[in-house]
Image 1: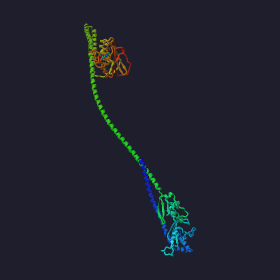
Image 2: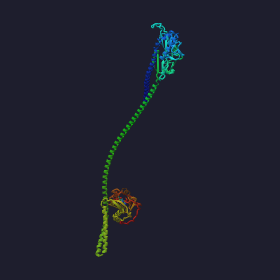
Image 3: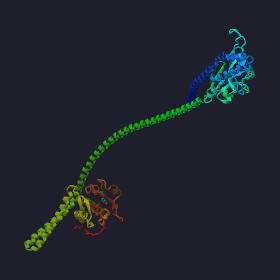
Image 4: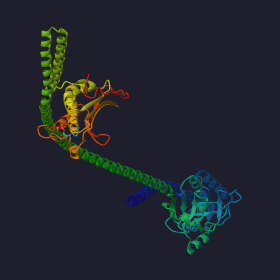
Length: 604
Ligand code: ADP
């Protein structure tokens, strides 16, 4: 900013100086030309009349007049001649003076203010001419008060030979007015003045400059002016300082050492210079603003570039990171796939193991039930044999009705055995996993039927409260397997006690079918409760239990989306197991009780 300010100020100053110099030079050159032309005009006018007095002095009338000043006719003739000369030569006046400076004839002889009779011997021009030289002088007329240029030429005395230097008879004088020049200057813009040897402005375009001096006159000059009455009636004061100090061009004019001065007004030069300086200042300002705008633009561009580069960096980093993450994800995905495969293998192994366990559990249970079943089958077989023997006997007796009755008993016993065997076959068969709607009440009946003989044999009572309809989705054989398992455990538990009662309830609880089996046995030992569902956990003597029943049951129930849990039976003793399976047709209905079938087992 400071540099711009200093630079701008210097440029303005230089422009100002340059303009002043150039315009001043132009103004001066113009003034020179103008002044030269004006000086030439004046000089020309003076030269035009320079020889005229000499020519006049050669005229006979002039000599006549001077030789015979008392001759009125001669004087009159001279007056007429002079008047004619004045007219023709367009001068202010023409007159003749005698040896003493007295005017003997004049062109204005008829005027009131005629020169005739006036003595001008005190005037320098008269003195010069009367001593044989050409007299030249500029002065205000003492008679007319009109200024003019006086040009005098001696009139030689014919009595003297032309080579001798005797005093002249008189002199011819012409007064030439320079007013016309002065008037022509009045229209000039720049002041013009004609200055005499003493520095007095005797012609001037400015009226108030006239008869003033460039500098204060010295005493000698004052005395000279006073003696010659050059500027009669005027006191010569110096010009005002401002005017005197104005620059000017000067041209010499005429033989008297006059100077034509043209004063140059440099105000226009200064005005132009001011304009130039202001223009330069505006240019500098514009340049500064331009430079500022450019630098702003460049800064902006730079920050834009930086932002773009940063963005590019960030984008590159992001790409790197994305690539890294993608690689990590791919690795993780690969690991997961690996784990999943391992998991699948484990699951397959588990399923295989589970199937084997189920099968093993069933076999174990079959082993246990084998004895009971043998007894169960034995009983109807023995009965059938007895009924057959009876029928033979009755037939032999011809008692056909009794024989038929016994045969009917045999048939009943056979179908009972058939039923038992069918159930046993279904149970022993490895489930083929057929899944479909299962009526729980039917499953309960089947399970009860399977265990009926066992219960009866051990003097235990199984009571059942079941809803007419509670259907679930699952494998009916497996459900029956679970129920048989639970009922068998309950029977084992009550077998050693006095009461020996087992109660099964089927109910609906919200969206679940709930089967609760409560027994009057000793309940679950604390150790047994924690490990019930562990495979091969059993408290039964060897050969009686494998410890697989609950473990398998639980996994079957879970596979069907249900749950198997051991509860504490209400009251002081006994165990309670709860089996929950999701209902196929969930609309809830209040549980209805159906009466216990019988004290023993009589499912039908
Ligand atoms: P197992 O019957 O072959 O012993 P389970 O898995 O069916 O195998 O049963 C495990 C154990 O749980 C039994 O040995 C027994 O101690 C206990 N248990 C099961 N049901 C009952 C019950 N109703 N009352 C008391 N204990 C029971």
